[in-house]
Structure formats: C-alpha cells, structure tokens
Amino acid sequence: MRAGATVRYLSTRMPAGVMVILVVHCLRDLPLTRSRAPAPPTALAATVGLRLWRHDALLSILAGTAVPVALAGTPFTA
Image (cartoon, rainbow, N blue to C red; front, side, top):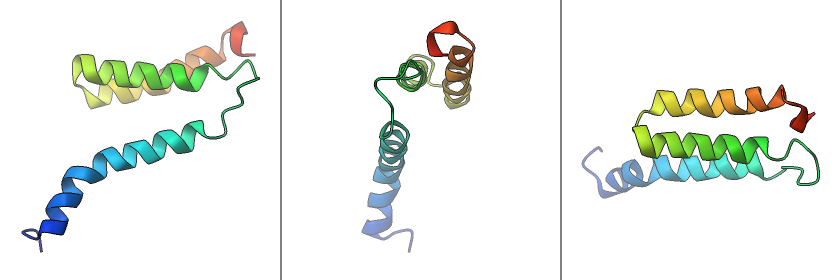
C-alpha cells in the first residue's frame, strides 16, 4: 500500500493541507473590532517567520504559543 500513487501523493500534500485548515479554523471567527484581534495574526506571523528563519519546528510552535500569551498580559489586548 505504501508504494501506491495515492499514498505518495497524500504524504506530500497532507502536511500543508492540514496547516491551511488549522490556520483557517483559528482565524475564521477572529473579532476584527475587538482589541484582542492582533494577537492571533501576530502569533501566526511569529510562527511562520521563525519556521522559515530557523527551520526548527519546536521553536516555532513554542513561540507561536508564547506570543498570544504574552500579548494577553499587555494593556493593548485587554
């Protein structure tokens, strides 16, 4: 089954597809009029930027988690 064309196709396309679905799911109900709106896009930018710069999945995941938590403590997102 691993030698099949469908499995090879899915193994190359699934990771990117899953990431797109997760991003859309996280950002779809983002309240654009609230003061908390910048936190998720900022976390997304930090995650993608670190991933492209350092090529370290763990670092980008940790930063993407820490950025909105840090922003939640600032007066800009109250």
